[in-house]
Amino acid sequence: MSGGIPPEILRWARHDGPSLVLGMVRERVESGRVGARAQVAPTLSRTQRAEVGRLLGTTWESGGGPLPLALLASALARHGVTLEELLTAVGGPLRDRAEERRVAADARAAERSAATEVLSAALRGHGAEFVAEAERRCLPSARPLARAHDLAALWAALPGPSDEPVLLAVLAARVFGDAHALDRDRPLGRAAARLAAGTTEGTSALSTVPVEADAWRRSWAGVGVLCDEVSSTVLVLGLPLRGDSAAARLSRAAPQEPLWLTLRSLPVQVSPLGEVREVFVCENPSVIESASRTLGAASAPLICTYGRPGLAAHRLLAGLAHSGVRLRVRADGDPTGRAIVDDLVSRLPGATPWRMEDPRYEEEDLPVLLDDLRRTR
Image 1 (cartoon, rainbow, N blue to C red):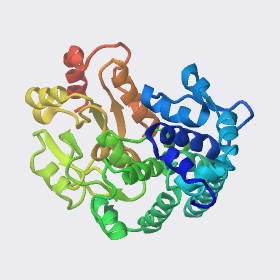
Image 2: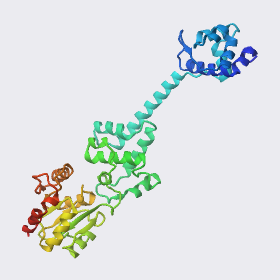
Image 3: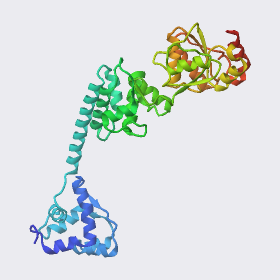
Image 4: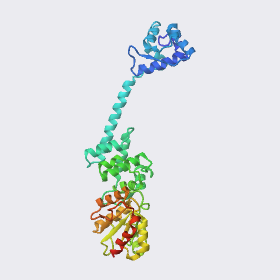
């Protein structure tokens, strides 16, 4: 006998049918679902049902119905064995799954609370509403404490307001030992970019991951981090810039030629050279190309955002606006174009719409736009 259980019961339990039944019964017992009417409904072959019936009797074997746990317990009791004793003998100690779930839930809650504390300390100075939304949006349900520690380490390593910007890959390698740790296809990178956007643009920015290239760059730039300095560009014509930056030298060397200026080439503080008081802004390169070909040196300074403005365009436009230059902003008359104009006018001091009264594309208004550019010289 094993633990007081008759050998014939142990032999019975090892057959396929009883083994399958006892496995289902064990699951119910460990889950606490063992009320007076508890039963299991195993799918048994004729042979397996006959094997179970050797203990339960021919009435159950021929009945074809489910197996009440009370019937199984009663049959075992006739041999001096309890259901729990047999389950333990054939499958090891019974687990209290309800208690395990409670303990696991308590552990998850404790970890979540600790993660919130770590994130809150890292975001000191932000309000409770922001921290709560950051916790909800940036910490995963699994292992939130590890993510919180990663974000806290990252935030502690960000450059200060007076520091030089740092490249994203350099920062990732410095903090995590992996230059790709903050890439867009990494969960940590997406969470960090979401948090970066929120710290500069407000709580509402936490609701989405800034996955588009320009939005991704803007989010990181807001906390002093550059994704790279050559992918973001802006197209200019006839706009001389002050200083010795690469952009300034290029703008002075080819004043009548449309020039692509990279973010890298622009100084942190952009200002115009000479008596530049008004600069026009368009969305499509066809406008700047036509101005160069048709007007040449007679064209007013013109900037093309090439769709939604990227970091390079934002840096250039912000520098001009804060230097006192009046910006006249135009884009296509579709919803995207109007959104571009509305955003720039709201961001830049002194900026005003340029011929945005009618919902027309820039190419449709090209003659009048060129006339505006010519008359300002």
